[in-house]
Every structure is written in structure tokens, then in C-alpha cells.
Length: 260
Length: 252
Image (cartoon, rainbow over all chains, first blue to last red; front, side):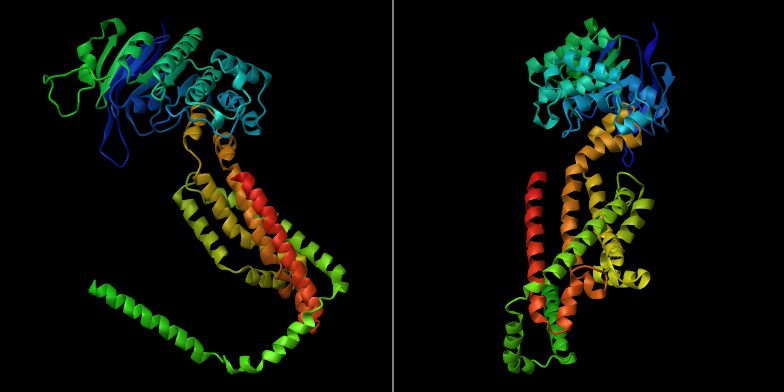
């Protein structure tokens, strides 16, 4: 099977600080896999996802996504950015625009530059946007303005925008952090289900080990910019998860209970 | 504490000195006010009743002022779009936006009437120098407002469109513009109101509009006609302000 993600010895320090967001991170994932990134805030999950999305500059190491290598100094070409979809933690929607318009924004990378600037989507663009809306269960919200929607509805719009872009790799940054448990389950079912139906690889970050276990094939634990463990979901142990969320500064071995 | 007390004492002395200096150096002759009472009454008396026969001049002058304000504002918008982009922190590098901002500050520092006088010298009398003057003068403020509108938009949707493969122009059009459009509309209407108010006096320096008639009638001691024109100016300002308040509520 072709590899979707192949990264080797990645390191990244935020410019203007000595905070090491990523340190010697290596990981390979075959196409079609569903990977959950677990770890406390500041572990480097968002940095890793942003890097894989081609929006981070100045990192060291080697990274290739969907068979093409990423350049630490230049953003990838438009078509390649379209191949990688990203679901943002705070949704990142254009608040004053309609739901349909926001989902069609996901098509901008697939349109010719002229069509994209003049806002002249093809009937195929509309079709894909409509079917993404239907898949996300929000076809009836198409004409609503985003600033009139609830958090769960906004997350569905953000996922629909990502799906409309026909991605082969879906990266989701804490897609359920703002949702109650019932909504969280719905959203992860939707996200992983729609991605698999399209044969896409999924990587999502989360703070919830139970849900990560339910919706991923593989769990990657991150802490302090490093990969703490990388296991198939059936091999994940309670102790490993607990260790991941251990309060910083408490030496291992002192009494730990899972903080999830 | 002690040095601050000393500082405010020095500031007080300075302010008192400046005021005293103003009284001493100009030929104020406050005594003239005392004897001027009857003359002021006579002057005001000659303004009533306002002469309604100048209606034609009022309509013609108001229309010209309105045209100067509209075309001047339009020119300012055309200049402010590129300059606003070049003055924004999010669109260009500091090497570009710093000098552009300085240029805009310099333009803002020159009063409209001065720009108009220069333009009359450059292109001759009539509404054309007025239009050019309004366009240049208003750009100093409007381009700054546009730049601030660009810089105040949320960055997240721009990153999302970048992630989806949209180019810089498509990001400007679909992520930045929808966020700044209401601010731009509000600022543009605000600047148009200022342009109309300020262009009322352009005629005094020969740059067209209703100001020409005020100047003509006052200079030729036709105070009843000047009164009519003044009333027309007040009516225009009040009307445009009412329209602006109504519009601004829509963009709130």
C-alpha cells in the first residue's frame, strides 16, 4: 500500500523563542489509515498537523505527504494543498458568508485561478459542495449565514468544506474539543466515515483517549514535542495514556491516575 | 513626586505665557467689540429676511458641491484601495507599509483648503481642482481606514483558504473581503459625509461649488442673499448627517 505520510527526524522551534515544538519526530502511515494524536496541550500536535498541511516554514528534517516531499522554505503547489484537507479547531469559517459559500471555498484550490478570483464555480463544484453538505447532514442550512449557527453546526460546515476539496489526506486539529460528548461522537463518526468512504487517510488530534480508541486504528502519543508511543489501537495501555497526561514536573513512578 | 510637581508648575507657567503672548502680539483691540454693538445688529438685520430670489444659484451651487463631493469621494476610493493594501501589515512587508503610512500621514496633515488652492493653481478655476483636492485629501484618511480594516480581519479563515489551495487574490476576495466589507462601507460613507461638509467652502478659493456664492454675496454686501445660501448649506449638512446616521445603523 502507498504511504500517505512519511516523516523523518522532524524538528521545529518557534521563531523568536527557544520553545521546541517538535523534536526528532519520525512517523510513517500507509494510505487509508486512521490515526489519533493524543497528548497534553503544548505537546506539538497542532504544529505537526500544520506542518503536514504545508503551512509551516523553517522546520528541519524530511517530510513527504501523499508521495511528494514538503519543502521547509516554500508552500506546496495549489493542487497539492487541495489534496490535503484540514479541519481547524476553531472552524476558521467566514462568519458573514453563507454555509454553501463557505463549503464552496473548499473548491477554490481545484478551480482555475481565474474562476477562483471571479467566483465562478462550475456545476461540478456546486455538485460536490451539495453532496458534502448532504453527507454532513446540513443540506437544509445551505443558505444560512455561518454567524447564525451553533458550534456543532459550524463544525459540520468546516468538515463539509474539507470534504468538498476532495482530500486524500484529512488532518483535523481537535475536531471535538468544543463539543459535548454526544456531539463529539457524531462528529468523529461523520469525519472518519466520510474520509474512509472516499479512501482518504485521517489524522486527528484529541484529548479524549476513549473516543480516539473508538475511531482510530492507531494511536500516537505526543509529549514535549516528541513521540512518546506509537501503537495499534488494540495495544494501547492505560498506563501509557496516564503517563502521557502526567503533570509536568512529577517524576514517573509517583502516584498516577488517568487524567483524560 | 517632587519632580512631577515641579513639572506641572512649569507647564502652567508655559501655558499662561503663551496665552499672554497671544494677547500682546496681535492687534486684538477688544475695545472695538464695545462700540460694534449697533453695527452687528445692523449686519444681522440686513440678513433678514433672506432673499429667496437666489434659489437658482443655490440649486446650481449645491448640485456642483454635491458632484465635487461624490466624484472626489469616488477618486479617493480608487486611490485608497491600492494604498490601503500597501499600508496594511498583513498584506505587505514593513519595508512597504512603513513608507506608505508615512505618506498617508503627510497627506492628512495638509488641510483641504490648502490642497484646493494648490490645485486651482495647477489646473485653473472650477470644480475640477475641487474634485482632485477632495480625492487627494480624503485618501490620507480613507486609505488608513482601509488598511486598518484589512488588518483587523480574523486570520483563521485566510489560513483555511490557503490550506484549501486558494491563491493570494482568491484569499483576499473570499476570506478577507467578506470580513472587511461592512467596515469599508461604514468608513466610506463617513468619509463622504466629511467630504461634503468640507467641500462646501471650496468655492471660496475658486475650486467650485456653493462656497463661491457665499463669498460673492458677502463681498458685495448682499447679506440677505448670503443668508439664503447659508440656510441652504445648513439644510444640506443636516440632511446628509441624518442619512449617514440611518445608514450607519444598518452596518452596525
